Amino acid sequence: MMMNFTISDWVMAATNEDELIHGYVESIDTQQGVARIYVIASDHDAAIGKVKEVVHHDVKKLPIAAFDIEEQVKSLIDVALAARDKEWFMELFEDLIHIKHNVSKRDEHLLVPTTYHNRLGVDQF
Image 1 (cartoon, rainbow, N blue to C red):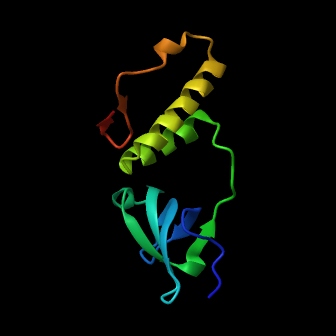
Image 2 (image 1 turned 45 degrees about the horizontal axis):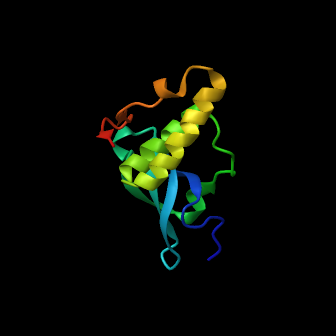
């Protein structure tokens, strides 16, 4: 069974419950023809932060893009926090500082908070 995506790809999909989801592929079951997608955005709020199983033909791989826009980096920070990946969080946070520094010439020490409050409602690091 040919699938146009692999593990860790960013995808959009429609579930059997007609939810539109956006996330990344956590695992693939080629025998069943399904992908398990970690949901970061959905038209059904209860799906966010969960893993949804989707039939492979309902999954569309998103194009690869440079994540240099502030809102995209903030969304990835939320994913890193949810995954408790401190190294990825620190890398993304540095990217965010550089983006903000390029947008505004404020002192860099004003950009570094002592904690980060993500949009999932969890204070981290």
